[in-house]
Image 1 (tube, helix red, strand yellow):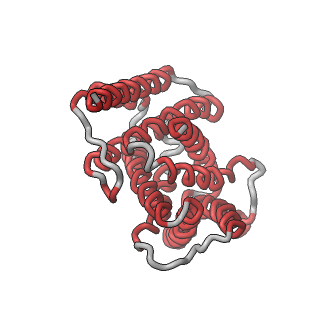
Image 2 (cartoon, helix red, strand yellow):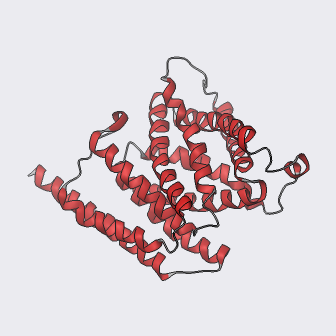
Image 3 (cartoon, helix red, strand yellow):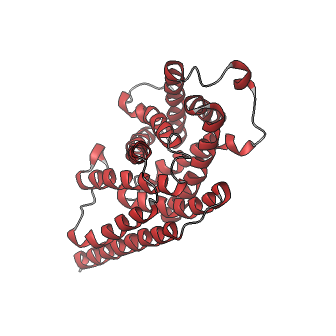
Length: 292
């Protein structure tokens, strides 16, 4: 069940990237980030009010509230590469960033997360994953590549902080603060760097394409589900499962938005999937051997 949910979140993430990127093309990167967080905050606030959650109770570590701030950086770093490299390449590079940091989290149990030691036998699966990622990068624009990689690493940090806050409260409260803090930071960033992106008339104009405004809602669902999954699946495997959902949706989005299909993207997705299967089988055999 948890593996299926991870695949679903990956699919939603791919759709969210496309929606947020399209919104950024209309309003600008910084203004779009504000709009995305407003949509998400309105929805999750409605849910917490209905459930009568105690949002501002004391006694929680302050750093656990930083997930939303880091999430703003993630949205910005994902929006900038949109249109410069393919959606599939953005997702592949994001996976690389998630995978690298995910292995570190698993190995050392960062922030109290469960430890999952990396065995040398799993290098075969890891090499397949890396080959799959490399095959999906058809163009190289340094800034876009670096930002996509960092965005992926940021996702691991953000989801870990959100999950730890959810352990102390609940999934709804953690998701609320992700958007509450995120919107605050997004507004500050917009006032500092994005005031020239649009004027008041443009800000009041809504696009006729309603799909572009779904990014905030999709993000809310994604964050809530990820808060549950982080403590159930290792950080590395969670990243790979998310990617399997992402790559399927990403290929379809590239076809619909850019009119392009690359067999390299399909091959990349297959290689990543094979790498995941190999490592899971190795883990299963190791567990069986230990129980004998």
